[in-house]
Image (cartoon, rainbow, N blue to C red; front, side):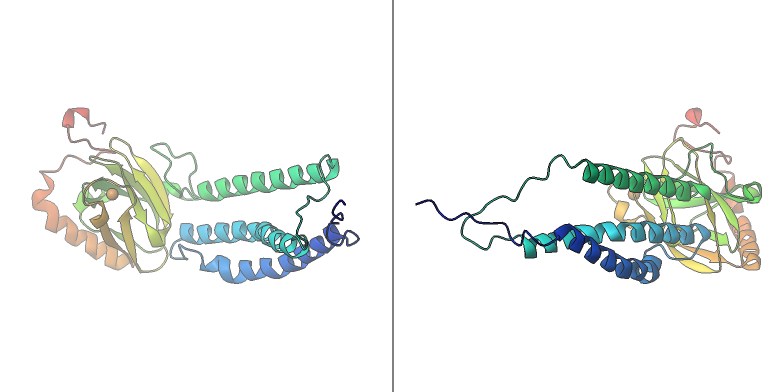
Length: 286
Ligand SMILES: [Cu+2]
């Protein structure tokens, strides 16, 4: 005798409708919670204008992702609870291929979501000239960029040094920036590829030899921030870190003056300030 046919669980229940309602309710609860509590807690914090913008972008993107995440998790739990095999025989449910409406909704919603996130993310990353740097000819300049203070970041195995062309090209071993100022960082390298990562400022820009990689950051109040090399650059890469400071305008003025007189005796041994440097002077661009 043939075994009795196993019917799929609760065929009369409108699973789609029930799932949709549960998804909408849970998304309506989870999304504001994520936007209010989780989003603002995402790094890098609010210690520079660019960092704040990154927190805002992350908040928008993680909020939009929340209903998608809820959908996936709820779907897993729902099918686990509703469609698990209750008998000894495993049978497939009825196939749902060829549903043009579901296919259309799926393609439109997923495409629109991904395209919006890509466009939004790109715009947010570029609008203040931050992100990973824009190379020597920055296409996206923040408002007031002509008044920005130029500071050069030079990576070399295994430390960063900083030059201030506005102040005679003095080169110093620690980064100090004035508060409430738009800074144009020129990130470059003397040898291997490094990456200048000032975490709290929301800046991470590649330092390539022979390249003037421009990235903007607008400082806020006085701050101590961490600098790390973020590109594996050799044996002591892990020790290539520094502590930077954002200080008030008068403190900065006094500090840079001290640096100028302190480093004045060795300035003549430095190459003249240039947009980039190479160990071989004949190949220098600047
Ligand atoms: Cu490194």
